[in-house]
Length: 357
Image (cartoon, rainbow, N blue to C red; front, side, top):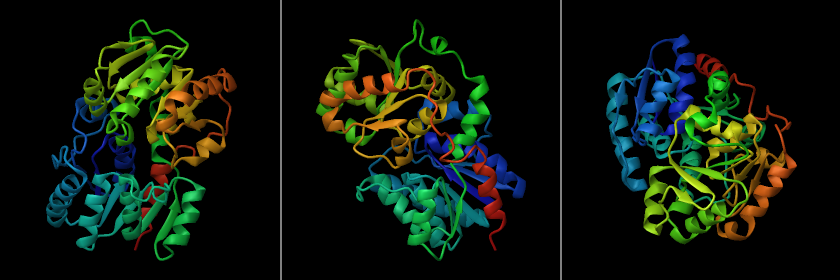
């Protein structure tokens, strides 16, 4: 038996293809930690991607980083002790990833880290702490790109490193043909427009900074649609910016996976702080502006598909960066799109697990 563990929106998306691929090796025990539990961030994804319900839902919910990780650790330990899988597969860099990986390692169960080897310069960023710790205890490191592969071989010579590509692309390619029209998601929406998401703590925990970004978006020449994460909604309400319309910026509730892809594909540009949406925009041929001082997906920047704007500089630089990206890539972009694989990552992860002793 293989345990496949996840708990956030991006992880549920990636688990949809991993679960099917891993099932070719035998029974898969799926554990959803419940780190994301809002309908659009969890249950809707199961419906849209045709994923069977998890075998176990840990109901971790929201809490501080320490409390949430501890809850996932103790509940995952109990579950893994009971089912005793041959291997435990975790994805990405969330508290769910770390909590489950620690539980598995303490039980001496082999850990497979999918999306291993990414790095940020801020070593104390929550995601960076998670990914470094999980990489250190994993038996099999499945990397999304060449840079991550070289890094893991240098940092962890005793682990098995396999360059699988990015599972997120597998999912995107599987649903590309059935994306809805943008106007069916946001009534009255007409091209050209911008699609934006903002949810990271670097913005939501600093109200003045979030306000600057929102006001900069509202003042742009192009209309913008902001799909509002629950945490962002609360932060905007505290700022008095939670009305549906802010200048040229239209606020809509968080959208499902298919809707997000459709809005990104139809946009003149994407503005986001999401690692997932950065890559999705890149694969869809839509230029991106990322509201962060750095990105783990540095290849998108090197190719010109993505431009970084520090949250603290948004009021001065965001509008300029958006205009430059739209002008540079007017029409479907034609950058190299296979830096993170060509859509067969789940198969490569499965083959690597099959080869484990």
